[in-house]
Image 1 (cartoon, rainbow, N blue to C red):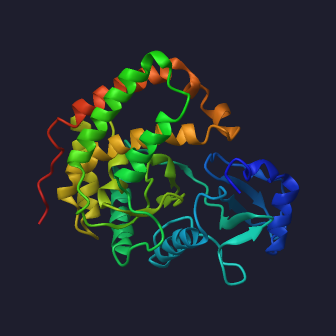
Image 2: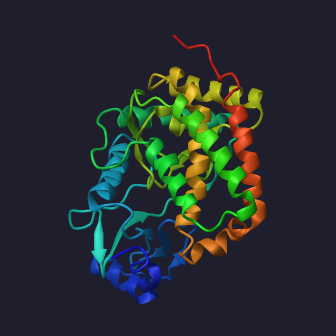
Image 3: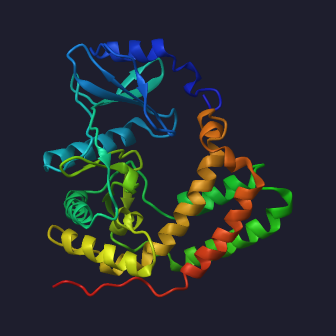
Length: 328
């Protein structure tokens, strides 16, 4: 079936409950929908009074092998005493199927927001990122993709061209600036960077805080350069980002060699994410959750701002690369 034919419309409350009961889990509370768009994620309490979370994977996004690789990476991290939301193994597996939907069950790992401007928290996150990458270096993903231009800008470019979202009066300037950006990204991208297993989407909202960090949502895990898991934690002006980077790098280096040479990829990676994000919203627009959550995406003002964002990113790509003195 295509995505249009097989989506979340049949994922009713009864289907959810029956799916969980099929693997021996009986919810005693209601299913509370958590903030997730790509998948459907629910928190509940079972008859043993355990707080659990179940994730129903978006149909046809990942293969079984790719989902199981995500699970194995989380379990590898857990085995290394790294705080990560890892799936539960039930009846010898972590991936289950019910009525055509694939799902997994996780312990609930609540916490407060990670404070990116808290230097102590940032240092601890840097230390754990070094440990995550130490594990990620051991062996690559076989079935999951490697971060690159085709998935993040070339395919999205085609997706946007075939969409009807971009206002007609902006089409020429939008695609002209987009193509300029893609040209610069292509010239600055180098597939020769060492590639390791990554969290893949390590932005502050995917780090919860209790007594320390808890890394959640490895749904975008893939192979790629280590700096991908670092650059999204940087914010503010150049001085702020250098100070944050210095804090992360010193802590990270306690467990893994910090990828100093990959600092030149920070702005290209930001450009890749920018283009990929727009196309992701366009591709998912038929899912009713997306118009509700992102109503501004269909407004002309959003696309006018994207033209300006392209110009700003092109300027950022010409600025001197953030650099630190390597620690020996």
